[in-house]
Image (tube, rainbow, N blue to C red; front, side):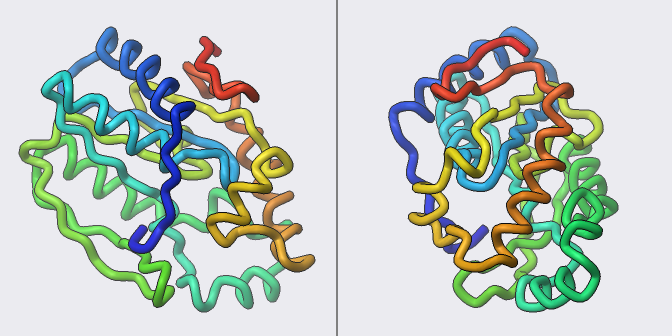
Length: 211
């Protein structure tokens, strides 16, 4: 996402190094990593730390933020969720999975790929084109990233939105009203349901452990 605030710290770098060890052990052509976790848990920071760490091993890895793929535009989403019932619509169905899988297929084929990219300043959706010919790995991060079919390594961050309050404040995602609190609670339920899909867990101390 354009304009996103990334606060990469020592804990993200340390976790990334352990994930990279696992990636190298499983390495294959057009490898895909999925990183899931709740709002403020450090998904994007971890994805970027892993991508930069892999460069040291001669591997070009690109983060792909699937929160760019919401079907409802940012400026319309609050009203749409409220009108249709937060507890009924917040979840996997909000994403444009058809476009996600098209872009993933283009990555696997080493093709040029165009997909959405949210500008957090304007809250508009741009289109970003990437040439995947020279990209070796894709790091998919987002609330429901490890739900994505075909992921070769699934990483799940166990921190919940209750533990990530400070990060939400810094990134402008602190619940300011009942609406945001209800959204976070519904996302919590949906994200936690994916824990069993994980190969690696990032625990409450941000340590990497086998699932």
